[in-house]
Amino acid sequence: MTQNIYDDETFFAGYSRLPRSVQGLAGAPEWPELRAMLPPLAGTRVLDLGCGFGWFARFAAGEGAASVLGVDVSERMLERARRETPDTCIGYRRADLESFAPDAAGFDLAHSSLAFHYIVDLAAVLARIHTGLAPGGVLVCSVEHPLLTAPARQSWLADADGRPTWPVNGYLDEGPRVSNWLADGVIKQHRTIATYLDLLRGAGFSLRRLVEWGPSPQQVAAEPSWAKERARPLFLLIAAQRD
Image 1 (cartoon, rainbow, N blue to C red):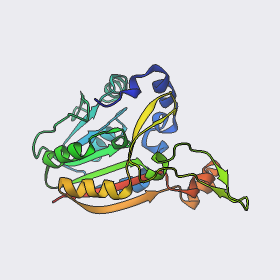
Image 2 (image 1 turned 45 degrees about the vertical axis):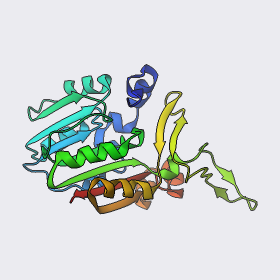
Image 3 (image 1 turned 45 degrees about the horizontal axis):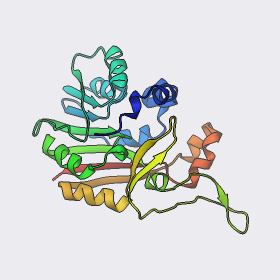
């Protein structure tokens, strides 16, 4: 079973204060790029995996989706999602993504934001998503960039000349990484970019677009504290299509 860290009281309290939890999609700096990867949503059947507070589900409904199913393992997240969702075309279900099986060909779009790096058996999850998409259906997802999940420690160092460096330790050694982000003992699964692409291809997807996302110069100008985030990408954004 996936670690349900979002129902940990300390983690949930910290996560609820993040800009993306308070402002929704507008507080997620990668959202404009991810939105551009989406197909037209009018009339589609949408599956939101790791739906959290339901921000994307409500966006999809506002874009004219015929139906949206949000799935999450966290009861705390789903309780708020249900409370803040008036749209009758949206439903929510509590389920572990490691075992959740969507109806065959039941969806036109599968979306997932920052959830797949928690999944242990991603190959099996992607295979079930492929089954759940109608022919030509699209998967759009984001994960923490492997340069972030790889390091044993995430701290700035300097080389012999005093230039800042980013210590990437064990990039090719895939598997679980434990971090103390918002709470102690958060487990994420490190994979290389090549592995993400191989898993998609093995599940029967073809790549439509891949973006190694970091803040643009315009975003840094608007929010100077993001300047250091230009040193390496923060997120990996992927759009793939069911073959």
